[in-house]
Length: 135
Image (cartoon, rainbow, N blue to C red):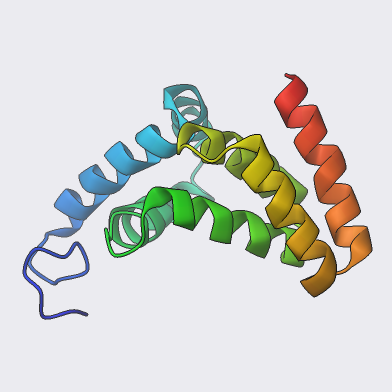
């Protein structure tokens, strides 16, 4: 935790406040349609997970203004390429565009991933990006 009281990573927020902040951030980055679908698909098995990612990933990490959303989107895409997570990559390619990342920046990032993550991973990501950008 940080000592900066203005940081979303402080203990001054309640879990409910962190959830609400996370829900706002999640909607801004991923869009209402995606978030509404995820929330509508909650089950007794995954509802704690949905709450956790809303509070932790979106209410703390993405809400921390130390890194701009543009940078977070690029980092997230690179990590998802490295981990071979096509479903999450598809979602975050769309989110990156919402966050102001250009297709040229994504192309350059995927070339960078070819060197550091491997050509097969980058090749799959290029195909997925083409599919996402065409829709």
